Amino acid sequence: MKINTTINGKAVSLEVNPNIMLAEALRKAGYKGVKIGCGEGSCGACAVMIDGRPRNSCILPAAMAEGSEILTVEGMGNPENPHVLQQAFVDSGSTQCGYCNPGALIAAKALLDHNPNPTADDVKDALDGNLCRCTGYIKRIDAVLEAAKAGKKADQKPAKRAGGKK
Amino acid sequence: MLKKLTRFYYPKTIEEACLHLGNKEHKTALIAGGTSEVLRSDNSIEALVDLSKVKELCYIRQDSTYIHIGAGTPVQDIYKSKDLKGPSGELLKTAAGKIGSTLLRNSITAAGNLAGLFPWSDLPPVYMALDAEVVCRKGKPKRTVPVQRLIDNRADKFLAEAEIISEIMVPVYGKGTGVHFAKFAKTSNDYAMISLAIRLTQKGGVIESARVAVNAITAVPARCHEVENALLGKKGSAELFAEAAKKATAGLTIRRDYRASSDYRKEVLGVMVRRGLQEAFDKAKK
Image 1 (cartoon, chains in turn orange, yellow):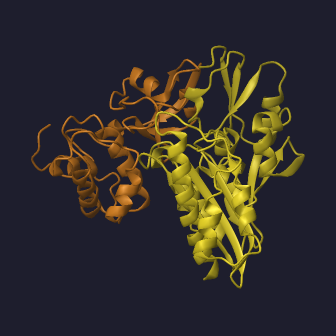
Image 2 (image 1 turned 45 degrees about the horizontal axis):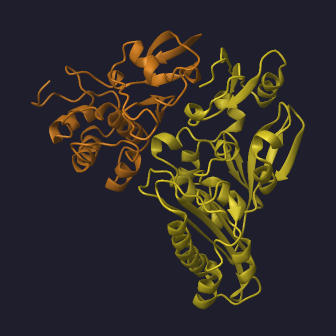
Image 3 (image 1 turned 30 degrees about the horizontal axis):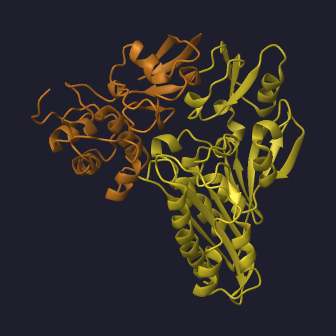
């Protein structure tokens, strides 16, 4: 079956099997920033924004995305023009293997979209569905708080690149 | 996995959803948040009716007698609601906040948690403790039933053909009522091993009404009737709550799995009920 969506601002039609989950459909369509970790909605590596809400895409039937606006990490920024959150993750060293980062960034963006001045507890609450098994959580909490300070409106405005590897 | 699934319907209204659900062409079923879809295994379902685009199912309103929650409201909205007030609002918000994670709460819906009725669903015992009512719609016609009836019969058997849950109505309780919710799990994101919801109403320290409901420790949500009966008409005290809590598992069949034995869960539930009663009572007296 065919579903019509908007992915990272572009209208996209996806041909999907009715039983396939959104994470798999997005990866097949080239959005490899969507990671599949546990595949059962526990780890959050697959988080994407659907109509403004961060959700686990590994357990969401792709067909339910019909008519929806999807944001994946690719839509946030890229190495040349990173989103203020992506830059903050780099600057704070919130990345080791990086597998959980796309999901965590999406959850963090959802938080800042609704609450540009979060407390550390707000950040913990918003990222409670994003497991990290190497870097840990302290640095990413700092990163989100820094990004909030740096960006205020974390949306759009890409931060200037300040060092860090690609 | 739904081996015969070939199509999805995307109704925009309740009536449209009921029409699709009742169509005789395909065998249909409902989907709302979709989080339990990976668990569904059925080789007869040919089409799914996606309720997530029915905007009239998504709202939270509070008037002087009831909190009205649209069936399709994501539980994250309950957790974050600024409109929910009083003991009922407090219990709903606390429990909703303990469901899974932010990412799951944005998918899981107020009625999906009830219709799916998994042992680990956190809201059903809350609905039971608050004596909630459920509005069911079959196109235009509607009926309102106590949540207990829906739970006793299970939603899939209770609902008529082409009928859906459209709203949860939660009575508003005033002064003299205190509530408590606790979830016992390995981690805050893990499935509950025990979820517990309590509502106590007291006047002058005497308990006039008590609801103690559990899930996860049982296969389906259940009331701890013996605890409730031990409290009614008595003056609240630490001794009374300790005595009543001893009856927490009376009449219940306690589950066990690799997370914990049934003996362990029984022991823990007793402690949770004792503490929960005290907390609810203290709040009720404020």
